[in-house]
Image (tube, rainbow, N blue to C red; front, side):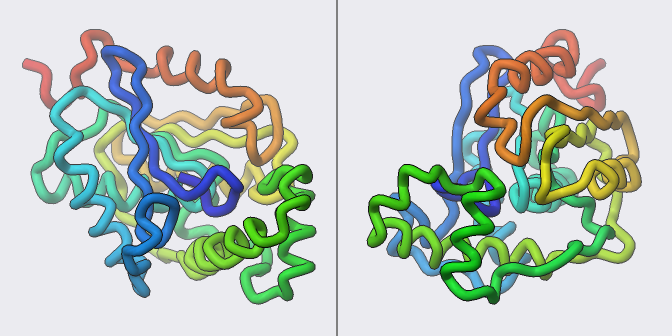
Length: 229
C-alpha cells in the first residue's frame, strides 16, 4: 500500500509458497470507491484487518510502502494481539518510523503544488498529466492518504514480535534513510535495514530485486518461528 501513487492505494501481501501477491484495497479507492473512507487512522487499520483476515490462512508476508508501512506495522500489532495467523515477516518500505516526525507537510498545498511534488517524487507518471479529469480524482484520494501519513506519530511505539524488515531507496527524496532506520526500535525480534537501488518508487522500478530480498528473508519451511515445534 502506498501513501501516494497513480497505482492506487493497496496493502499487498505475498504468500510464501507460490510468491503470489494479493492486495487489499482501501475504502474510497478503485473498486471500493463507494465505501466511505474512515476518518480515524485506527478505524482504517481495523477495516484492513477485517478485510485481510480471511486471506491469512496460508504463510504470508506483509508489505507496506510509504504510508503503507505504518498500516502494515499497526496491522501486525493487531494480528499478534488478536491471535490471528501471524506473518512470516513484515516489510516496511520507504516509510518513516512511527516515532520519527515528518520533515514537512504537503497535504494542504494547492493542487498545482501538490501535483508538482508528486511528479518530482515519482509518485505520478508525467504521461498521466494528459488526463486532467483522472488526475483531479487521484489528487483527492492521494491528498487524504498524505494527510493520514503526516498526522501519524507515536512517541512510544509498541514492538512487534514478527520479524520486521525496513527498506528504502538510495535515491529517495521523500523519506530519508535515517527516518527508516529507526524502525529497529519497533522490533522485539529479528530486524534488518536495507537500502535498495532506486528512489521512492523503487518497489516498482526495481521489483525483481525486491522479490529476491523477500525470498532471502523467508524462514525455511515457510512457518513463523513462534509456530515451529
